Length: 121
View 1 (cartoon, rainbow, N blue to C red):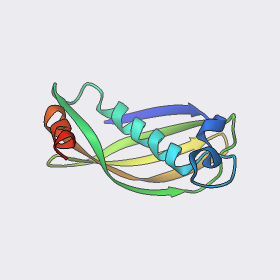
View 2: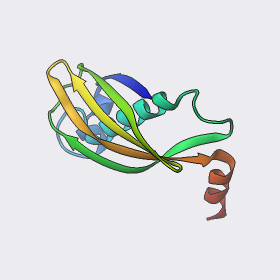
View 3: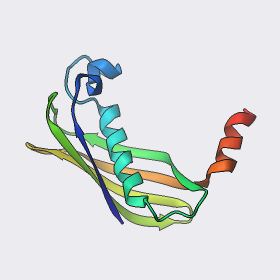
View 4: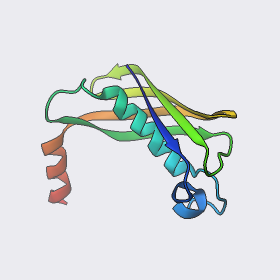
């Protein structure tokens, strides 16, 4: 399975706006979220009713800066299913080439049961 997600970088997506740095380029937290969106898009229509996936692990290298106004494309490819764990290879590119690459592990959970855990704490 494969999914993608696109983003045109705005001021709200910058490291300075997100508090993860002081520069006005695409912030790593927003880039990771874009890659997770690509993972979710890969799963669209493939999980049983009442199931969803949640993030568990992110291994990520942010390699190049992306300026405000640039478009970024994130891609996720499901590489392995290990029980409820779904392991994706992810990458993101802009017009200048590869911006980031890594691995994201998501876990399939029952939505109701998962949300009950939140209210129990």
